[in-house]
Amino acid sequence: MTSIDITRLGAATDEWFYLIAGLVLIYELAKNFQKKRLSLRSLQDMFASISTQLPYVIVEFFILGIVYVGYVYVSETFVSWSMPINIWTILIAVLACDFLYYWEHRLAHEVRILWTQHAVHHSSRHMNVLVAIRFGPFEGAISTVVHFPLILIGIPPELVFFGILAVLAYQGWIHTEAIGRLGFLDGIFNTPSNHRVHHGCDDKYLDRNYGGVLIIWDRFFGTYQREEEKPRFGLKRDFDSVNPLRVWVSEWPGLFRDLLAARSIREAFMVLFAHPDWVFENARQPDHVNNPVTR
Image (cartoon, rainbow, N blue to C red; front, side, top):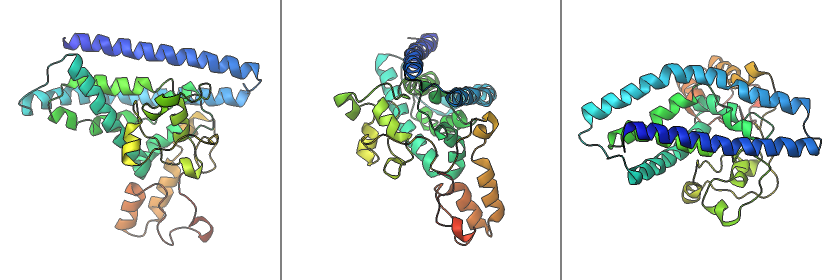
């Protein structure tokens, strides 16, 4: 199997999962139309989700090409051996990318500067397939940094990029309320039920179910939560905008405000790299001190 074969396989994988997601979207729209839930605001929210692809794709276009060349250079210059490309190493690459995706995703929730990007994905009060493409502009760039260690252990760049693509493409169909629980599959894979929990802003659902394809990482690392009552979707704070520009930069104003209010280098560091819920002591008005910053 050659690099060209991997490229074709990646394109086919992407197309198949987007086809599945497209069918789920059609079913969602038909169901919501039948039940008269298809409001103007929900359509505007869908457009806001689609709009995030504009800055995301622009950043991807300029950064990913450079990153891929860098991956290849490091692989050929500094790594003394490389895995062959076959069905087994493809599976290994996808599994490794899924494992790293869990940690990338978890860090995006636990480090505020990263949350400024990932919060875009969580900012919708709705749960539909189009939320799956609701990305912060620099999420793809962050992903390439997290997955870089795979190059150092000998996984070819082609397989790393295929693994990243496969894990993301899989998740298109799970952003839906139209599919209920799937029995034993909910204990192994990231399913619509598991992912609805992840998008919930109820206290019991916050920071749970980070997995991409497999949910076993969450079960192993203690972040799994079964879907019980219906989640309330979106950010915990009062954000319900359908204005694309506000959606793109939803967390930046709060971050800049807190940086300007920081009274020391340590406080500024904590604003950037602590958990998004962190509030430095006496840095805000008393009625805001005990409230989450961004969630």
